[in-house]
Each structure stands twice: as structure tokens, then as C-alpha cells.
Amino acid sequence: MSTSTSDVARRRGRRELIGLALVCIAPVAASYFFYYGWQPDRFKNYGDLIALTPVSALAPVSKDAPVDDLAALRGKWLLVMTDAGACEKSCQDKLWQLRQLRLTQGKEMDRIVRVWLVDDAAATVRPLGPDYEGTVVLPRSRFPELATMPAPASPRDHLYVIDPIGNLMMRFPKEADLNRVKKDLIQLLKASQIG
Image (cartoon, rainbow, N blue to C red; front, top):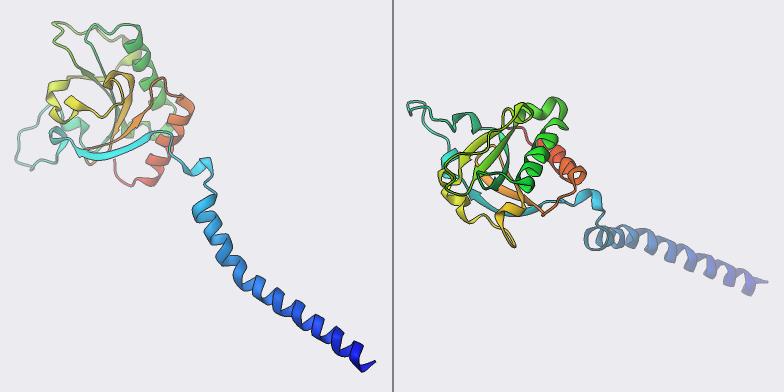
């Protein structure tokens, strides 16, 4: 009887030791799994983060500097598209997307400015209707850093985001899913205390 009692006690001791080891190892194993293995989609950006490129036209100016037409853009989040002045169907679609993306931000929409950079030497730019009131139309030459906007194919294929400090920082893919773009913008505005 004493032999079987000592065997039972030994087995119980082993189980307790193994259980204690598992309790100690489990948090470390879980941390490696969550850090290296599991990456849920809700923590991923839809847009591509690109190397920060300061846009000199939006750089802070001294209070004594003359006010220019870009002063209203400083300190705002900019949704930027680039296209020809004639603004064919694809350009009009992008203007509509910019408007919708801004409107979907609700009370935060005043923090966003829509910008259309005209990238050709069009003598006249297609007039914007009342639906697009508030869209800022500028020649791309005012933004020399954007002359070579990072894009796999053409800068006209993408929508870009410039942060309130004046850095080009994000690009959305061609024919972007507006719901996913909206979620990225919500996260940016929520995380940012400026702009």
C-alpha cells in the first residue's frame, strides 16, 4: 500500500510541476503568437503608408509672411487627387469619391480639405458644379514634391493623403474600396490631435 500511495503522490507531483510549467510558459508563447503570427485585418491600413515627403508649399510660415492661397490648407488633412484640367469621366469619379469620403466623416469633415491638382497645361479647367463646392483646384506645379508622386503606374490612378503638418504620407490603390478608405480616414482623424 505504501508503494501505491507513493506512486500516486509522485504522479500528482509531476502533474502539478507540468501544470506550473505550462502556466509560466503560456504567456510567453501567447505573446510570440500574437506578435509574429496573428495580425487581424482591423489593425491593418488599407492605404499604403509611403515615406514621409514634406510638401514645402504647406510648410509653416512666420506670422509676418504674406498670406497666400495655400494658407487655408495648412493644418488640415488633405485628400489629394491629380488629373487633367479637362476632367474626363475618371476624373469626375475621383472628385465624387473625394466628396463622399469627406461627407462620411460627419462632424470631423471640417478637418479635411479636398484638393484637385491639375497636372497638365490646360488653358481652362473644367468648372466644378455646386456639388463639388469647396474642392481646391491648384496646378501641380505649386507642389514640386508631388511632381513625382509615388505610384506603381500613374499618380492619376490614386488618391493621396497629406497630414496637417504638410507631409505626403498615404496612397490609396487604384479603384479603391471607399468603405475601407473611410475606415482609414476615421482612424487617422481619431488618432490625430492636430488638423
